[in-house]
Length: 156
Image (cartoon, rainbow, N blue to C red; front, side, top):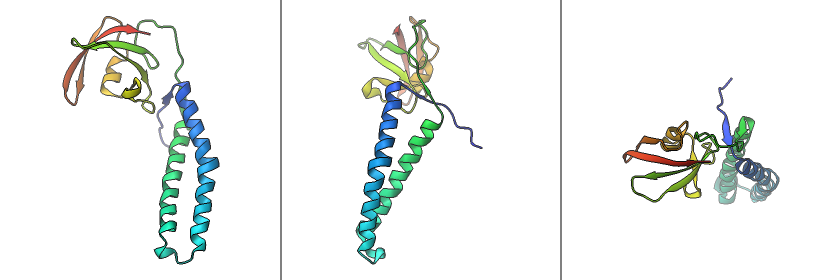
C-alpha cells in the first residue's frame, strides 16, 4: 500500500483536471485507437512509422490519464475561508521584497502552482515559508539565488 499525499486543488483546478480527463478518455483515446487500427491495417509493423508514433502517443496519453486519475484519487478542495491574517493554503498574500513593487499570489497546492498566473505552490521554497506567517511579518527564504526577505503586507 502506498502512502499517497493529499493533492490540494482549488475548485477551478479540480474542474480543469476533470475536464481534461474527460477529453482524454472520451475524445483522444478513441481517436488514437482509430489511428492505431489504421496503422496496423497498413501491414509490416516493424517499419511502420505511423504505428510506432501512435504507440508512443498512446503511452503518453495513458500516462497522463493515470497521472490525473491519481490526483483525483486523493484530493482536497481548498475552501475560501474568512481571513484571520495567517497564511494558509488558499490564502492570497501580498508582499514586497526589499523596495520592489508589491506582488500578490494565491498559495495553492503543488499541482496548480504557476507563478506567472499568480499561483504559488505550498511546497515551493517561498510558499512553504509563507504558510503560518501573518500580516506584518518579515520572512527569510532560501532560494537558488540566495536568501531573500519578504515583507507580508496583506493576507486575504
